[in-house]
Length: 87
Image (cartoon, rainbow, N blue to C red; front, top):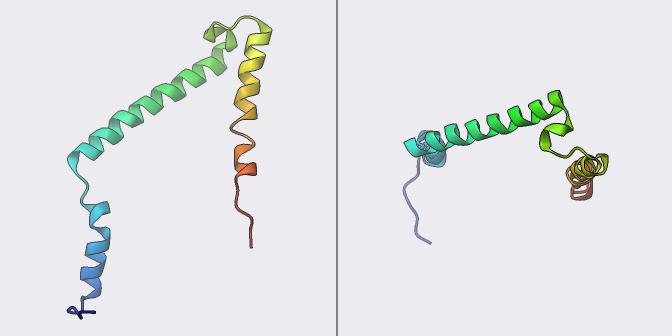
């Protein structure tokens, strides 16, 4: 192996953190746009909670029961099933 020159701690930190600290301008635009989309999604979910399930157009009890069951069935057990065992 070829020996290189020793780097100072400042140079090592600068090299390791370059991708985090020197983000391109398009990144912040993308974060803003995606944040706006998430805000709209949370607003829609809040409106549905406030006004009720009839807002989705599912006026029959079987339809909204299916909707709520799928919401509870898929996201809730997933962390329990796919978690790693503690050592």
